[in-house]
Length: 218
Image (tube, rainbow, N blue to C red; front, top):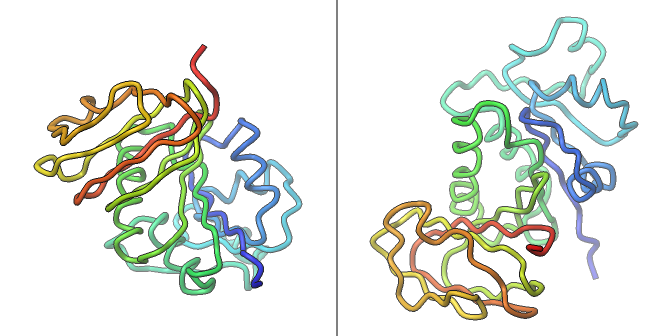
């Protein structure tokens, strides 16, 4: 069986403090760091050996670039942000079918960046069908889905669903408030649901962004 490569993309939002994203960063086989997040790697002294720094370079000094050497990957294109550039590097160097990708440090600080980064999950899923991708925050994990999926969970885990296609119905079972063809026309309308047991299922013809907490509601 092929080994699954664990690839982390480090963005420039709030640096994680929770054990789950910190563990993902420290245990990753390879880290692709946005250039605006490089200071976090340097300051945290994480001791990572396998990493590159990707971006247009506007957040790095010339001394940083010299220190990085061939770990520095400059991408001057301006149509997409550094997170997209980092993901493109990751998916072009590691096979989708035997890799797991986690994005960390993508939330916090400016709210417009947070919302944009979360919505990028759908873009990445569209561009790379079959990718195993999550965004890990200090409170839980985001992922994008379309079609039918069943997820492992635990009782009282908090589940929030955001639809990117509000005219398409959502179906869900295993939740405190079941979804039977529900149309979430505003982002808040399918949030703050709750798992009842050890798995729940969702189905939609449109793209959904799903958030699951690390801990049960008390």
